[in-house]
Amino acid sequence: MEEHLIEDAMKGNRHSLAKLLYENYEMVFRYLIKFTLNKTLAEDLVQETMVRAIEKFQLFDPDKAKFSTWLISIAQNIYLDGIRKRKREKAHIDEELKLEDLYDLQTEHDEDWDRVLDALSRLSEESRIPLVMKHYHGYSLEEIAQIMSIPLGTVKSRIHNAIKAVRKELEQDE
Amino acid sequence: MNKDHDNDEKTLKKIKESLDFLDTSVDVKKPNVLQLFDLINTVEEKRNAKKNKQFLVFLMVAAVSICAEIFLFSRSTAIFLIIQAVALSCVVPFIVLFKKKRNRKVTF
Image 1 (cartoon, chains in turn cyan, yellow):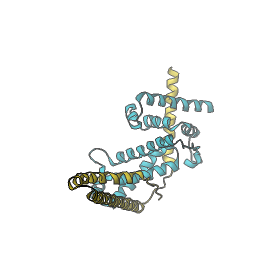
Image 2 (image 1 turned 90 degrees about the horizontal axis):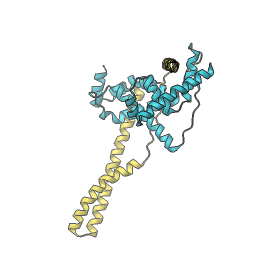
Image 3 (image 1 turned 60 degrees about the horizontal axis):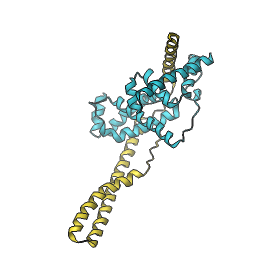
Image 4 (image 1 turned 180 degrees about the horizontal axis):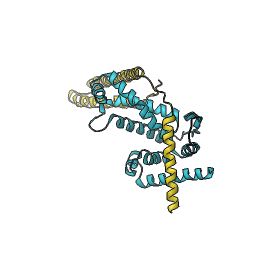
């Protein structure tokens, strides 16, 4: 099914491309929300990902990667570029995470999860991203270093410090 | 050392569970296919407009340079400079267009 859509979209069928993007929209959003922990930011990023995917669709090669993987790499680059840009401009305003903005607190769940998400949100993005990449998505340390353009040692220490920080926060609450 | 390792494992397990929970509990504001189709049309229109603008700038720079050189220099020098002007015309549109900040914000 997806192969047909990709084939049609590559021939210039805009409806097929729209359908292809529609089918992957939620997946990209769910990927991003775990890094950003911010619904508005994830929504903005996924929209920008769609625009970039439309612009660069001619460069997509189905023999090299799956369409979803290609979209994820675009989303990842946009997110990381945004962080670098904010860092350069020094205009980053730390937004406080409000769990009720992310999900309904009435939903039945383990209370620890709120504390973990809260602790994760307090980490800097530079620490949270490699942690989530490694221990949630299963990227290798080398892959993370390459994606984030940082040395391998820095990846290791950031992950180590991030786990330590989350653990400390959880222990404090207990 | 072992206790530390165990605690790290516990923390990682909790992180994974929390993110799994987040994954299932967050609502996605998803556009429909028609809205995405409109977005594709808008992006394509912008891309075509950009190409046209680039070509127009190329023509203008080339025309102005060629006219100026024909009036100011001898024929052989003019031919040499015309080649330079054409090369310059290929570069200038990119500089002009890439300097502009693009507004990419879209809302569904």
